[in-house]
Image (cartoon, rainbow, N blue to C red; front, side):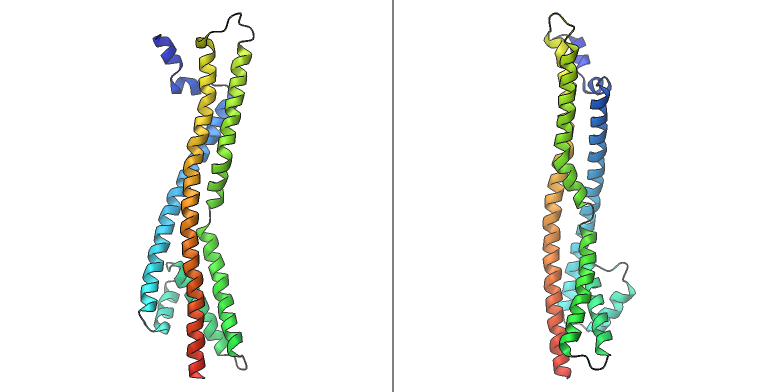
Length: 230
């Protein structure tokens, strides 16, 4: 095989000598891929921390400790507290406020407590789901962006042969090869984004179910304790 042909078909050479639209597509896909990996690693550490804090709080809560002591601790560490801890603090704080108001029935107090926990739950869930929409977009759009670059590159390659009397493989191969790089980059950007999105969506759903179960169980505990006190 001709060594000059090997040099012409090297990856770097093909990218540098690609047409401007194909180069822009490659640059866009490279940026999307790098940003996706950044969000993937950020979300990995965020969800690990959330799971660790949730496990720790559930062990502490169901160990039967004093709820007032737990509330004071969580309130003093609200910025560093876990998602479930902030839900607990919001619910218990609202419960204490409503309980001090005269004339409110038990159902009204518990409903208000649930609403406070639900509002905090939605904020925590939105925070956990941040950047997932970007991963979903990259995963679904990148292959088509890469395909656009491929189609454009192949079109330019064949247009370049219009003035050639007899086309050879050596003449058409560089244009087709540089076009196919765009498809490869599209898949390289899309596959990790799709895998990360599916994995993190599953993990967030599991955390969401645990937080919803806690809200219901905590509401029932407060309702039973208030009924006994009355």
